[in-house]
Length: 261
Image 1 (spheres, one colour):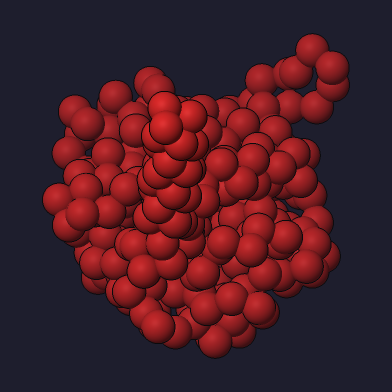
Image 2 (cartoon, rainbow, N blue to C red):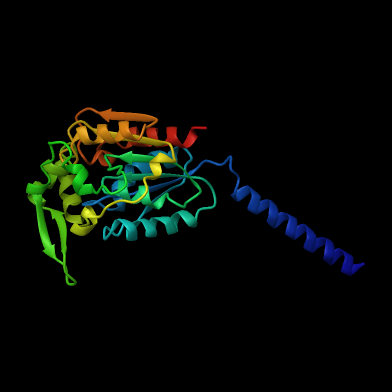
């Protein structure tokens, strides 16, 4: 009798464990939002967006972007995607656009891509080639370089130019902190050609500012049209750092992508 009770207890535990697993992988659950920062930024640039998403019941993860190479950075983000059992909305800012475009390839749980003032490259295109497709970027004149030990260069924005160049609609005190904590990007990463564009297989959304001085708005309009974006939002007067200056608008678009059927 005691053996039968033990067997029944074990069976119940197995059933409970199965129920728990099923609940965690419930396809009806809200997607996890994975946010990928770009060059000259870091994960805390998403803080305002994460706050808005969390308030609305979403789980958000700001993935670390090494800013070393598109393929290598995408592999790091893809490892984050593999750790998530349910659906994901993948969001990229600036150079984070090519990274999410590559990371989504082979990641079956990604349901949508959101490009936040970001590059959405076609095969063979790079951040550098796209940024020069239309006039308007003033980034080159604001950059400073640092030689890397193994060769090549890191690029960062000069602190005295950061506010006007990157974050003109962010308060100056906050922009000074952003300048001090910016992460440099390897020049080679910006020149690296992209692979298959996952936006051809996944629904994409785009949001950018009309006063972006890093990526010309005409370039972002071109990319959004080319990718047949489900929705494109242009924030009048917004800078390249619109995830800091307009987090609620970005969170709203992400939630729209997350709730789409």
